[in-house]
Length: 303
Image (tube, rainbow, N blue to C red):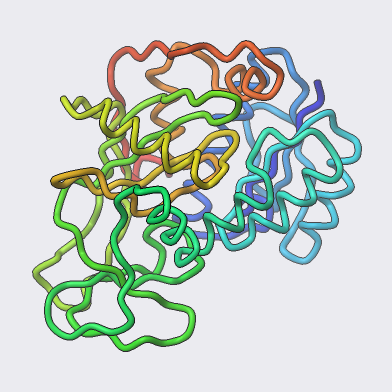
């Protein structure tokens, strides 16, 4: 099969850690499909991968090139910031076989207000959104955005456009990676390396890597919560569910796309992620995966 891979940071030439994480995810998936014998093409504004054929793109023509190449490929997968994923997934969905999420699921997960409402309706614990706050600790983040981007802890919050505040939950910062389709397939629990100083007012929260797998006696509880959240949001393909583990698992974010954890998962999982993505859509997805050893990385290691 001819497989189109499009990672937004690589495709438009973003800098900093966005490019580092994007390249790590893209390289991992490109290597996996290549290992299975597929012909990989990928969009890039300058970054070159060890495997696959590059297709030049930039910020101005990314969507145009994506649509053009999708029409010439047997299947495709796009990775992008949550707020852009609806439009870009629609392009893939309308022009080739989509290994990723549906546009509708992407839009639902991207909107933190609607996402929280769905989780609440399904009885899945999630930090509750507040209109304003005085005293205590709260997490302020964009209503539409990725993970820890522009996220901070504050003690006072007045509602303003584009941002929401949620209650702050003290606990372990974890994520669950899984494949969703006709049936759910949990891959790993990951321990997130988070730069966070809850004792400081207006302290930024930053993601800096993770440990995979994270061994915990509460693994089944975490898997059950992540599967329920993904099911409630109609997720498909690779999904990363961010969780704060306290008295119970609280779902903080649902990412309906490959996440940076895939970099470390690929180092410890016997199965190829490309094979799982294929079988998720075409049939034959296993009931479990084989994990051996552990892998820890920070953003510095991705350079």
